[in-house]
Image 1 (cartoon, rainbow, N blue to C red):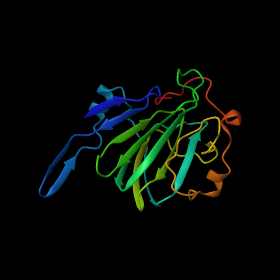
Image 2 (image 1 turned 90 degrees about the vertical axis):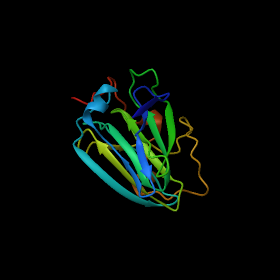
Image 3 (image 1 turned 90 degrees about the horizontal axis):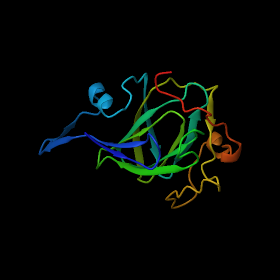
Length: 187
C-alpha cells in the first residue's frame, strides 16, 4: 500500500497493491495493521454503498457531532472527490482538496473527521463505497454549499449538476458550523 499526502492536513490518497492477470485482479481494500502503520484509523463502524448517475453531485456533507472519518473508493465509474477542512485549529482550515477516483486506478481517499465531503460523477454512472469511523447521525448532519464562492471549488462540471434538495440548500462557508478543536477518530 502506498500513501500520498495531500494539501489538507490528515487527508491522504491510498493506493492499494493490485495483483492482476488474464483472469482479472485481486486487491486488499483494508487491513487494520497496515492502516495503523500509516497513522490511519482501524476502527470503522459503518460501510456505505451508493450508485449515482452521471452529472450527480453529492455533498458537501459533514456531522457536527460524531464527526465521521471516511475512506472512500470508486468500484465502477469515475468521480471527482472533494474534502473541505472545517477544523479551525488546522493549518489548512477553509481549504479544499480534490482527487479523481476511478475503477481503473483503485485508489482510495481518506477524509479525516472535521472535513466536509462530496463528489461529482464524471462517468455515465458510478458505484461508490466508503467506510466510516462513526455512525450516520441525521440530526447532526450539515451540508456545506457545494458552489460557495468563498471556497471556489473547481468542479469539472459539463452542465448543471443533479442535486438533492438538501445539497441545493447547503450553508455558505462563512455561516457553517465548524470545529473549534479538531475531532479525533477515537472520541
